[in-house]
Image (spheres, rainbow, N blue to C red):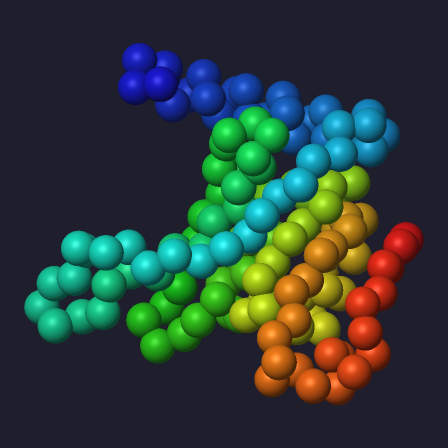
Length: 136
């Protein structure tokens, strides 16, 4: 990968996004996992380690994008920013319980994608409803 010029990778990514923007994007349905990770070993001057939120497509073994969270913030504010940067039309987005927010779900739907959001026990009203399958 290091031998590939960044400009070439940008062209390939642009072609891919162009394909997804057409109706053919619906045929290329993939699962995109959005998750945050703290980057260990990168602290300096008493600052916290960087926390990165990434969008990963396992079928392609490819990171579609990533955003660093602000130092006193969390994934809830970084996920919408990441969703603005990538094309998710026609795809299935998975997010852990941290990202189970109505605004995030609304953004995913507005971008014409589906989602699978995780629940934890502290979301008792949602847990009482039981499992649901949401469709377009």
